[in-house]
Amino acid sequence: MHFEAPLLLSSGASIRAYDLSYETYGQLNAERSNAVLVCHALNASHHVAGVYQDAQGQTIARSEGWWDTLIGPGKPLDTNRFFVIGVNNLGSCFGSTGPMHRSPETGEIYGADFPVVTVEDWVQAQARLLDRLGIDQLAAVMGGSLGGMQALSWTLQYPERVRHAVVVASAPNLTAENIAFNEVARRAIVTDPDFHGGHFYRHGVLPKRGLRIARMIGHITYLSDDVMNEKFGRQLRDAALAVRDYKYSTQDIEFQIESYLRHQGDKFAEYFDANTYLLITRALDYFDPARAHGGDLARAFAMARARFLLVSFTTDWRFSPARSRELVKALLDNQRDVSYAEINAPHGHDAFLLDDPRYLGVVRSYFERVTL
Image (cartoon, rainbow, N blue to C red; front, side, top):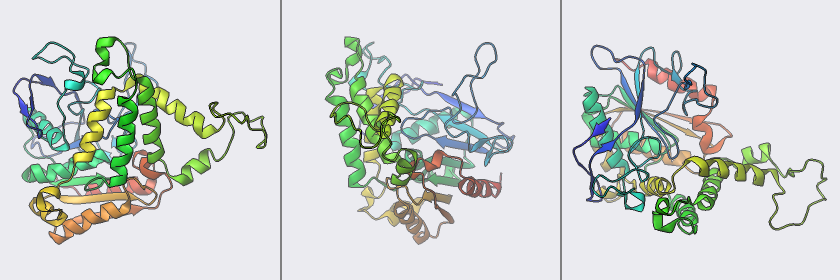
């Protein structure tokens, strides 16, 4: 969907003539009351469910939507009942206008000149798309991780347009430790010799080395220690070697966990845009609705009108259950209707993407009670 009118951003800059890529699932009912907006996290997109097919009608391998475990016909967010909308955020690299695209002002690829965007800016852009679709009010807005922050922001920026908010594995802001991880990942990118101050496209190169390291750092934080030990332990890459037969090298890949992280980094560097990574991690850093209220989270959510479901996972140390409980308390202080589930799961932050029957059962039960 193309938007010609300028969008004023939180930074004071504005952007015009931009596109938002989106997908819809299910049918909008006659009352236009069954729409659910699904907000994506750092490296996801508008493709939240289902699979893609090629020109011959064959399913494309590994094309499943990133929340396909949860969204679809008969699934917890049932597209036989709800009209689900996935939107790729402004500044991302999966179709919506971002640093890889040309500026209508200069005709040059934006690169590092793409304006800084915030969670609040994304919500404002999503609201414009819903206006075009003729949807005045959402049955629900839902997201995990950074997507959960967008769901929270919807209840504050447009309180009358949201009846329910489903916030999974998220937080009211990032801790200093989280910001630190983001900064180390950004330094890996900007110090890559191929970054060229963010204008690498002009030089015909990509800062793949920096992106690989950024992804490796991020991936470590998404997994729990238990999962890493169970999957990899201290296994050597060469299974024929006994534990005592290390190569004693400082540069070779010897352990399976090293090989796994390198593989994840290599994949990520092939499809993700470096400037997009910088933009999205900064949006994570900046999100803090309590900041305008002297750090008082309850005051920040005084304007919310939605009903809430919050879900956290015990081994998620990046967005820990304690952060979700902060949100629960702030909402209860405002006498909001809140349901909270804390799932005992070993998978770390990635648990919100996985097929855990207890987690999916909670989401299913909640959506079954959403009236249309």
